Figure 1 (cartoon, rainbow, N blue to C red):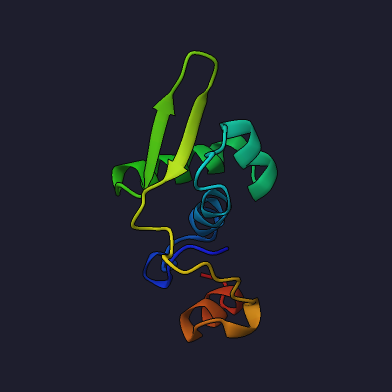
Figure 2: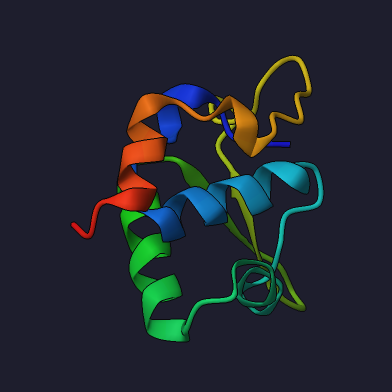
Length: 100
C-alpha cells in the first residue's frame, strides 16, 4: 500500500519511508526494519525521519523493548490501494528523470 497522494510530494527517501510505514501501519517498524525496507544509508534515513517527524507525518512510540515508528493516521489511505508505478503522477515521473 502507498501513502496518500498528497504526501507523495517529498524526497524519494521520505516517500519510501512513508510507503513502508503505511504497509505496516498497525504494527509500526523499528529503525532497523525501516533501513532494510528503504535500502538507504543510516544518515539518509535519519534525515528523512527527522523531517517527517517535524512535519507530523510519523509517530514515534518508545516501548520497554524497542522504539516503533508508525505513520500518522492522516497519511494512511482509508481504502487500501496498491497503486502501481504505472499510475504515477506527472510530478513523480519528472522527479525520477530530472537530475535535481
